[in-house]
Image (cartoon, rainbow, N blue to C red):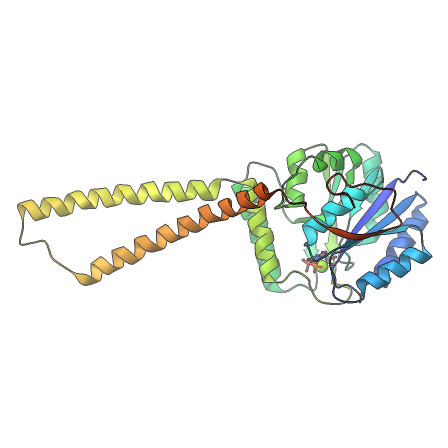
Length: 321
Ligand code: UDP
Ligand code: MG
C-alpha cells in the first residue's frame, strides 16, 4: 500500500443528496493538490441510498474507502471511527454537506507542514442557518469555555486537520460520551486556527435536530467539567444555611412570642415547592453524571461496523471485525 499523506474523513448520515457533489469537490481539490490522499466516508447508519452510493464510488475510485456502521451511532462516534481507520500522516475531518469548504484543505496541509499539529477551522460567519442555531451555538461555546479548565476554542466545529500523533493520542482515550473537539484540546499539541466563512448546506436538511444538539452540548459540558456538581453543592449549602437561620427565627418566635407565629398554608406550600424543585434539579445533575459513569462501566465498543470497503487490511484499535 502506498503511503498516504492526507486522509479526509467525512461522516455521512442520510446525505444522498450531497454525496456526489461532495465527492466531486473533494476529488477536484485533492487531485489538483497532488499529494497522495484517501477519502474515508463513514456511513452512520443512513436510511436512504447513502450506503449504496458510497459503495459505487468505492468500486470506481480506489481513493474512496467506506466504513459502514451497523446503525446510527452519531456524528462524534463516526469521526472517531474515521480517525481509527485513517492511514494518512495527517487527517482532515470535514462535514459531508459542504458547509466546510474543501478548498481550504491545501492551505491547512501547508500550515501543518510548517510545524503545527492541529489546524482548526474557526467560523467567521455562518450562512444559511437560523438565528436560533447561531445564537444557541454561540452561547454554548462561551458557556463551555467558562465552565472548563481545558482551553476549547470558541466558534470551532469539527472541521480541522490533525497530525497522526494527535490521532494516536486520541485513540488512547476510551470514553464513550465523546465531544471530539474538546478531547483534541485536552490532548494538547501545537494548535492554530484558520478562519473561514461557513456556507449553507449544499442540499438536504440538518441532521442535528434540537435533541442531538442538546446531547452534544451535555456531552461537552459533562465530560469536561465538574462545575454543575459544584453548583449543586454550593446551592445546597447556601439554601441549608438560610433555612437554618430561618428555623432559629421561627423557634425563637414560637418560644418567646407564641401568639405572633402565624400559621399560613400559602407560605408553607411555597417553601415546599421551592425546595422540592431544587432537590429534583440537583438529583438531575447528579443523575447525568451517574448515567455517564454507567455507560462507561458497561465498556461496550464505541461502534459496530457491518462492512469495510477498500480498507480490509486495516484494524481498528477499538473493534475487530
Ligand atoms: N452526521 C452523522 N451522524 C449523525 C448526524 C450527523 O454522521 O447522527 C453527519 C452529517 O451527515 C454531516 C455532519 O455529521 O456530514 C454534520 O451534520 P449536519 O450538517 O446535519 O449538522 P449541522 O451542520 O446542521 O450542525
Ligand atoms: Mg451541516
